[in-house]
Amino acid sequence: MTETGPGGSNWVTNRKKRRIPCTLWVGEREHSAVILDLSPSGLFVQTHAKTQLGERLRLHFSREDALLELKVEVVRIKQVPQNLIAAVKGGIGVRIVDAPEEYYGRLTGLGIHERAKPTFELEREPGLRFRVHVAQIGGPRSRRVELAAADQDNARLRALEEFGDGWKVLRVESV
Image (tube, rainbow, N blue to C red):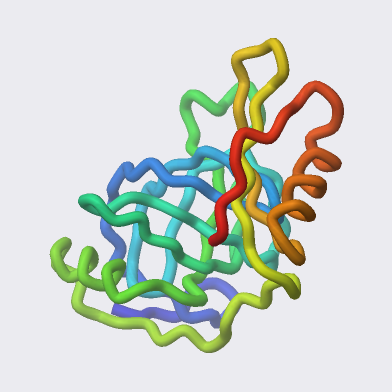
């Protein structure tokens, strides 16, 4: 059901509340997050990631044995003071720009049959895409970063530039 919301914008009221762990990519940075509700046109994602209105992001989550990637745009930011984080859920409201058919299949399984049509595609940096896995030298931490580069060697160098001294590249994958 679509209603007119504050400021005359349309928003979907047919949302399903869920707690789905996900990964949110803000630029080249990966953040752990949780989807709190979902619909054909958008999601509310609990996260501490710093984003801006209009920023386009990638969101990954697992469904059965498949990893789903959604391209989304930030349309609302709900910031919560540090002392209220345990009681109030902060995060971002996002509009779906692009989603695979499996996402809409999941919604159908939840009883949502409406379908929002994305109107534009997420623009990417020019170049091939790589996922670079790095680990802290002499420490327990590891990270992943996704970036554009001409080849795997350039992706390796860009990742080390981003993380700085004290990190080593474990592997580079084409995306």
